[in-house]
Length: 229
Image (cartoon, rainbow, N blue to C red; front, top):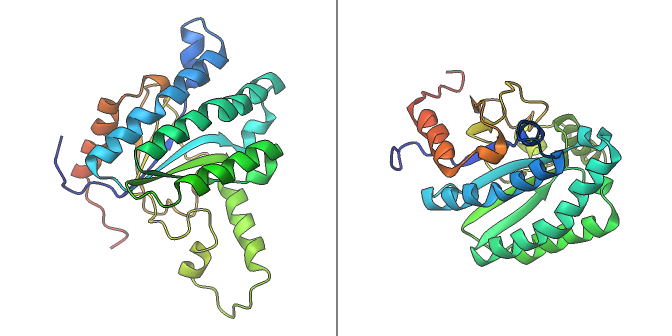
């Protein structure tokens, strides 16, 4: 792997393919989600090793609320049980956990847990890990506009608007990785992805290893970014 050459500062990941991974193995979709949750920490560890300061994982979209009630209920319980443990592990590694998305759509106990996770890790400096829960790109933009509605701003600038987004004060993603074979953004970080480099892989998220992560970064390092110039 190329060392310290053009390493991205912020990588966003659409963790796609949990259900298809499970189906191909004759397992329930629940098993796919559980295995997918286990795949997160090795990627965070690798990002720390490479000195990447920001990671964003899309864990649950606003559209996911329309899935079968049993699956939604399982995912909510997975967050209650496993993310609590994962945040403890991240905290020991000096990881700041930041949850983005429309958290008001979650049950009160998960809203409270979210606040606790962020408060517990807010002073950690090694890496910021954004977990996108109940997140949709258009929803984020509308929420930002609603926050702005009470502000006395004569002429809104791009920088000012960015300060009302969920990723305020963070750099835009340099690289987006989407697993599972689909080749679209699906509304993820619409505002922030203006010049993000895109990397798509057919590998399902539960099989996306640290080596595959490094492979994506390798390809990014060889690309030339012109930002429209």
